[in-house]
Image (cartoon, rainbow, N blue to C red; front, side):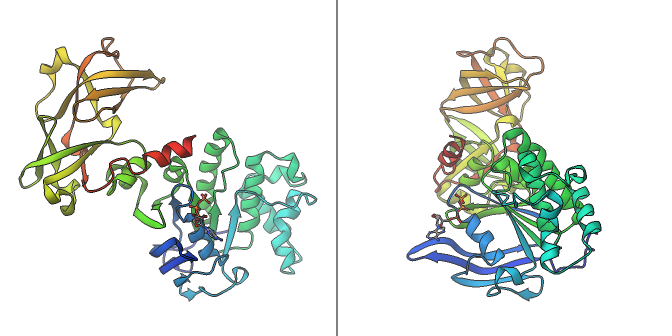
Length: 387
Ligand code: ATP
């Protein structure tokens, strides 16, 4: 397979106002979404948020209650799945157990009456690095290898768009990590659009160039993994994608590039550019900072902290050494469980539970969210998924 050129838009996926209701329940709220040709796009969200339903509407396995689906310039809203230029890979690989790997991959070509399949199947098996396994039966392969057969079997029909529904869900963690890199490599090589559904935020961030975070049938935020992580727009995204420390603060003053806030008797600086206009409504803001952006200094050395940094005082409640880093939980007046991840370089042996500390960080790493939101949105979801 060759990489498509950049002007080709036949693999664009455009959803316009599509929604899905079951009786009085709305699984997907009216949704507008464009996935450009050649991108690796992830729909990320907790169980029940509507991501699979969205994927199934693209595949033609579910009829939208409203709206339209375009693949490239072709409207496919009412086309049956087999007439759409898409293929789907499911979590259950659904390989034919009685056929060997070669014949499993050749199946789609043979069904279309193509006689000379050898070259295409061999190329496809090479792409997924299973050339040596062609004559084995599915049960003789590992889970990761079987999933690669499923991908090869879907790609051999030259779809414009490959849909992946939790394709790595059945694999153990180590294999899942390997397959994430493998799928990314395959996608880069074939250059077609991949739309991937997952509840695993690390998986979405590792593979996709654009992630749509879904919650309760809506896309909460869409962007590159780094953008979503660094600039979450909602408390749900801030808590669902990694860990955020969120502090309730009040606006003290607003200058050109920054907003000064009051929190727990101290002041914090927030860059105006990292706080949407709506968030300061009513003079309140939720201030966020990621745990790895914070430095910890023992209270006795507070005088050594450079000026201009945001700072909060607290006491270490707990610390866990996890090899590359130490994770601290700090009890402070502004947040009862402030999380700080410190890389294990020159550890200060005084930083143990009970120690008084100053947490400090570059104000540029602070983000501001609308204070009207639930500060814990997304936290429970992450805990439920982990359980
Ligand atoms: P999961 O990861 O668990 O599959 P999801 O985010 O993919 O979750 P969907 O499968 O899209 O979620 O389901 C969204 C909501 O729609 C859920 O609350 C589900 O119970 C509901 N739902 C899905 N299919 C149907 C159906 N055929 N009839 C009624 N409700 C449905």
